[in-house]
Length: 468
Ligand code: ADQ
Image (cartoon, rainbow, N blue to C red; front, side, top):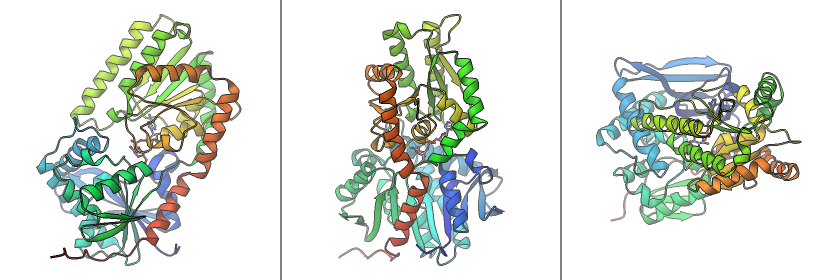
């Protein structure tokens, strides 16, 4: 790919850029690429404006430019809390029971995408590569095209892509799929997600799939699977250098010989926290010998607290954790430690390292980076064991973890037992296998594979008119 081409990333929120190591996830993946390409990152500032007059705030930081706009309260409610988080997020995680479709919110969602497009269009140079992230911005390319943008525009979906039967329940399904075909490359986390997209194209959109080429609505694009990774070496360093190594030592002292199980998740119903508590309760019930000797540390910062389903879920989780402590706890032992806040990444690395078992049991997850971080933070000579849901995208690559069906509380409870009692030789063998893949498929590989595929995708041509 030509180095000279500038990269323009667009996502709902931007940054942080300065202390990117502290941010994790998408920021780590993008910032280096943006720096290499003298790039631009566009998104919502997170601020609420009094009116919808578009003012682009631009800031140059360490070799890249951040450009943001503010949204009005009504836009933030309809676009972010509404259509994105109350409709698309549950749908993409196969939860039609929680999916709330409101046409008025879809309209605001489209309007905000249009505002994004108007602002981005003015910032684009003819040869830019544009990389759009996630479900908040499905129609962005269509809006950009209608404003005359001819650049290569790629999309990456961080969530799963649902089965066609689920997607078809969305009244706006066809409208959003048509919009997706204004991109030149559509990237998914796993081959399974890609397969479900291809099936939907063939069965519902009357399109065709030939290798990586997918055609529908008179438009051809490329589609592929690009599993996102972490900065594996850096995360390992976090766990073994201060302050991570100091947090590790503090945690070990506090544990006083007890074994720690750790869960780290945004407080989100897709992450399987309720079932995890239930499985931990079952584990304690079946293994009285573990009483007083194990602790579950669950770190779960509040997210999307303006959405009702998230508030209800949080209350339920707190009741569940308190129930286990009430039932099994002793005056000198509290089985569940529950922290409702975000922690610095270096602290997290130390805590992962101090934990005998990592529990990552989402009911459905695009990838799940916590699974990868937990493994990267382990000591190769005495590693902990990862218990991982089959329904996380990460399970496709991390088959040397103990894979469980999170809907099966008994199986999960037994996996916790197996993980805690696993012999050191088997722990080392599994860890080695996992690390080998994490080193190869890290965040740099994800980014360079994606950008190479975007540069190679067929250039934009307006859709062919429908045959008569
Ligand atoms: P998320 O749903 O946010 O991301 P995940 O992949 O687990 O999920 O990433 C969470 C990130 O936040 C991790 O880097 C983790 O360390 C961090 N984090 C979580 N809890 C934290 C805490 N208490 N303190 C500090 N940091 C915390 C979406 C998709 C995923 C996909 C990612 C990346 O839903 O499936 O893996 O994007 O594509």
